[in-house]
Amino acid sequence: MTNTITLTGINAKLARAETNLGCFYGEWERFLREKPYRFPGQFEAQESAYVFRAQFLKEPPTMIGVILGEFVHNLRSTLDQLVWQLALLNGIEPSGTQFPIVSAHKGWPTRRVEGWIKGVSSKHGAIIESFQPYHPGREPLKWLGDLSNVDKHRVVHPSGIAVKPGVVDPGFRLTANDDAGYGGEIILHHDRLLENGAEVVCAPCKPVGPAPQMYMDGEPAIQPAFGLPQPLLYRGLDRIQGMVVEIIDAFRPDFPSSGSNPSIPK
Image (tube, rainbow, N blue to C red; front, side):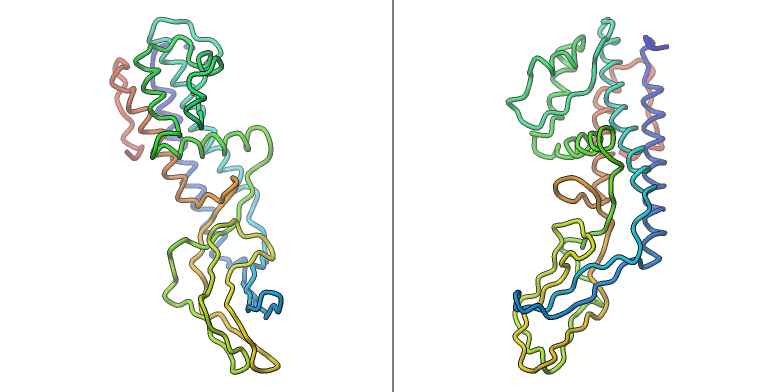
């Protein structure tokens, strides 16, 4: 079976990744319904601002990170198995192959990359290169590589929350008592994975009385986030999945009776 030219296993892994993603969303939604966080605020003189910080009443379940790892593994191994199949399709006995993910153009093709796609035709090698993340719009492939490396070699991905960029909940606003004397632009941090004590909202405040108080009506729009040097908001997983499907579909016509998997979004 290892030398059979077929996309059957790849299609099955894509379908399993879709199931993983559904489970991931479901677990997050259950967790967020419990309202496991709040944003208490206080005046911070060194900031000349009233600052609201994240406080978690309950940590996200580790199983969320495990499910994420399963999703990532199925997509990453789908690409590796694709290269194996491409070598077989070219009449070559594959060995040591994997799908390269190279962040900089100068890294293509290195000797290592050439070893990873040894046996793949030049036509197919050019298609693989066209999906590398140094090309505009191909960034999700780098996200996949980063997520995979952390999950395989380091730790289960920690999960948390982040403020949705560019989204303001219609019910969210700040009010203040007479002592606060606040004014100026409110800063809403959406560039970070929020941990306990992380600054979420910063409102300029120049107290005019002894007991400045501000109150948060509603809350910032929140969504799950996780890992990487910059937090990847969980809808980024849709883009990763879409990129992998696009890559597989680019090669699908070259495989005999490859068909397609209607359960996988295009």
